[in-house]
Length: 175
Image (cartoon, rainbow, N blue to C red; front, side):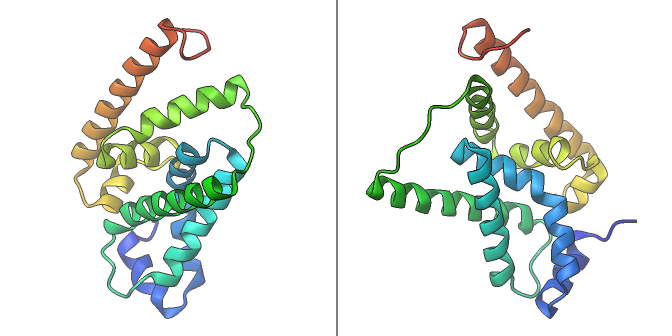
């Protein structure tokens, strides 16, 4: 059985690298999805997620509540992305035009990012990290039924939004 976030978070401040490595594996899908919603470039999203994990590890206090880790990760990525945007706007870095697949991923990422934070976290953990409702429930401090309802609600919102965008021609692909 997998160790809970609570147990892993208790071990991290003592220098247990395997505990934090387990948290990275558990939440890498969430981190990459959130980072991609900001960068729209996979390599930049990977770099941003790595930086967020690194900074969280360095700042992780003893006694961190397990339900706070996914939220802290999302906030750290958001903060780092905002800092990068500020730096790039000052430097004026040019960007290559995105492919259609990249444009579709940007649209999907923005739609996921527009969900309420609790819904965004659970649907990302479900579909990017492959966690079960019970694992997500333990990670976010809710019941499995509540997690299932959040995932279903978020999926319905995304499905309806993406179908509408495909019909309107904003999103390329087949229905």
